[in-house]
Image 1 (cartoon, rainbow, N blue to C red):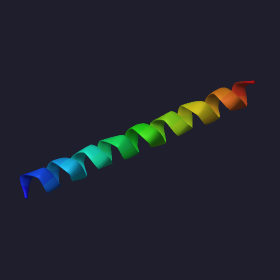
Image 2 (cartoon, rainbow, N blue to C red):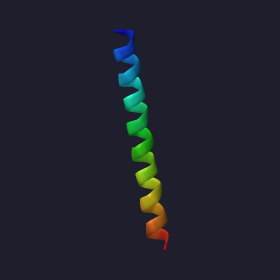
Image 3 (cartoon, rainbow, N blue to C red):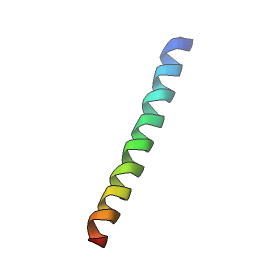
Image 4 (cartoon, one colour):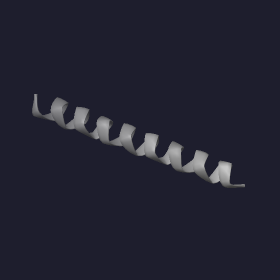
Length: 32
């Protein structure tokens, strides 16, 4: 059960990072 919880946390962190990266990319595209 502990491994499943760790995987869920890692997936959530990756999702947050991807969402933040997509926002940054959109911001840079809008600047150009």
